[in-house]
Length: 337
Picture 1 (tube, one colour):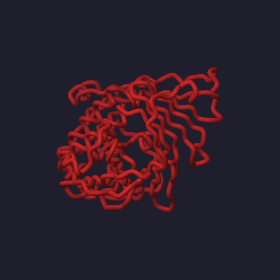
Picture 2: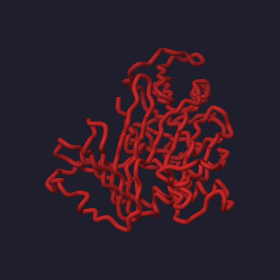
Picture 3: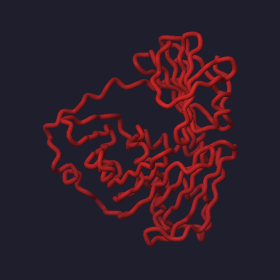
């Protein structure tokens, strides 16, 4: 099964401002990481990226051509697998337009490449640096470039970790390995080629796409609100967890489906926990098992490194998802009142 968040997997990365540095220049590993995050936004670059996602029973490999022009656009074209070949996403900083071959429409969604998105990434990095030990060591070479190996190890056990190989000269990330809470390798992202052109004509990238394709209207956006606003505007009584794993804080609270569904997102900078809640509903989920936590019955599924717990209490249905241990998932669920 193809992951639902393919776009975020492809766009997820670390980048940096131009300038020779490396360990020999006595740069703090945290500063290298900060520099790497900025580069994906500030550098003009084009490359072919390969992402291998490890799942039980099968591995998914995504190969994409990516072109980034700062403050102008971010272009993604899928080369593999065959079922996605030819798919194009063009993000102009306002909208991300998703063209799927064989369908006479363009799906549009809010930009992943906006200045606001960049601001959130920097805020997320600040949180990550509070919850992870960052270390640097020589990383050999990739694409004939000397690289620095940056390791992100959680200060609190039971959280995901990451290893990044960063080009010494440009500080651009050339490879990334992400490990789940249990230490399993989740995915590996590697650049197969990389160049830094001055400018690319976006019209050439879109050549061959019919301008007569119908755009699917952007649906009404879910509202990002404060927790107090969510409680006031939701169509039901919203409950909050009294326990979160160490280092996790609320990143955002959203109202969906005209206030009938609430999504709360928590993060420690790398790991993410999502809590959905709504009036009693039937949640369709495949390959789950029946479990009990406390006195409550629930549906539990573990796929890859993601764990999902679904239960209903006092006519409210909850869905809790996170890359954390099952014990921590239970502790969060039991703390919700």
